[in-house]
Length: 461
Image: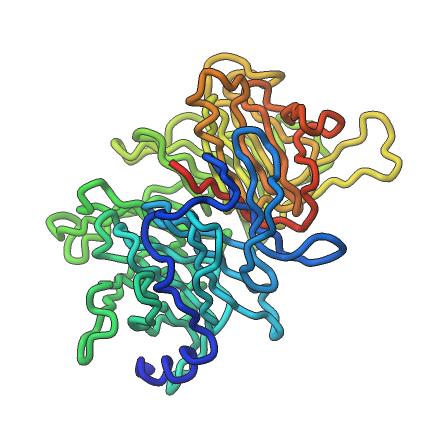
């Protein structure tokens, strides 16, 4: 394992700028003066638009007259700390010229308070429950003395110091338990999980990682409230393995001995999941022979393959009901809106792009699916039905706007969706683009919002 002092020697002097200036909970006046904000990452500069994190009034769908927050050359994925005091932003496009900048934004002052250069691209970082430390998976990070790249970096959000690193080959995704005492690391093309003890990271002569085997291309885990059980999402065939499944891990080692890894329960496909009550919503694209294999049964579309939404009961560890046909692609986003509408986003799906000018009735299809979980119809979508909105592009951000649903003076219940680089606002009561009186000629859009957007997060309680 590479020694921590070497990492600090190369990274700290040029790339670490005063993270300790703004960590922790909000204390100062918001520069936009807004009580309920959404942050929106814009990955390009051009014309009058600058790369950065835009501030949006999430109560009225208006962009205030404040400059974007600087966050690298190509700001993209964002994660909030549990106390909502900080927003963490990664800037990088996976090329040799990528800046790989990791920025910490103080939400109260709406300003960047620290920048750290990572040793490569990341698609996954998690934060400790006390909002003091972030752990970043860098699958292509070079490791001195090792042939296989891959690191998990630990960065203090209190004083800006790298607190340690762990060598885990090709580590791509991370999941952290409820107490912050355990992190699962998932590597590409692996049937194992690296179990990391965060308190041991950076301590000499201590191995913070234990490897457990017996999975099938695992990509994510959910922990029980008492952290005694983990439920692992196995990607299976879609990720080059054999069979997608849900697998229970007894972390107390009282059952499924000797490792606590219980037998898998097969599901059609699963790359992303969300828990509601005891129901785990699973989305993925079934594969057979190395290629997508699910027909678009019940949908009128030019697409020849589709994905599936599956319902899984954690209490009984069983699939419930029949899967629902959705768009294909690699599913990475899922969010449940206030009106029971489940939004499911994928990337690299089958796109149907109409000619220009589009003839009447021409199909437009992208990577977004909307499932109606209610027992009543919503707009044109029947109970248990699916809507594929007529929009193209990968879905990279989903954010229900919760405070509007809680406020009886605001009629619209909405969700912000970033698809194909644009921010769209969907009205959850009609499953269609929302009417914005501030931009009446463009349903679902915000005036003066120009850029190539990647992610969106609300940053206020």
